[in-house]
Image (tube, rainbow over all chains, first blue to last red; front, side, top):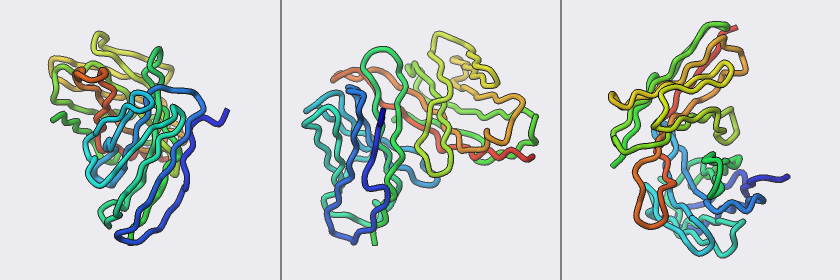
Length: 113
Length: 117
């Protein structure tokens, strides 16, 4: 059971480049989330999705784009990376029914030069 | 918007002693309060949660208490062990939204707990 995976685990890019972070879950969970983790801020929600083709903004959506054409995938794109987007990005998922637990992936550490 | 404050930011505890981490929230309509543990290099993992209709919940050495009147909740770890060393995050879930319920969690800024052998 693979659970929830993220790729790449580490990424270095330059200002202005487009970057896509991938998230894949094998549980068929309805909800998926993208967070960024920065020192002093904890985890902040970027975007979330309730199902395929249903997405909504979180607390810090500016500069990010998401899509969800398939239930199991939820890619996050930085259209034109900025240094302020240097962070650790976590994807999470949870099922619609039953447990309210959000299950987190291992994270992607992104450095924007 | 919703705000969750977490204290302390760092906590060192002698092995075997208890540790307490406190969080306060601002939205009286918040109804769900999970606690996550994050080990180095890993994603956060849920360790315990509590709903707004319950005052306390225990799971072995871990307990969470909720005071709705004061709008604060606390994580209690007893008989601490070296493997309890990690960063702990509290969170809350605010009121329901119009689109598709509310799955947004607002997280505190984290507490780095160190257990001293």
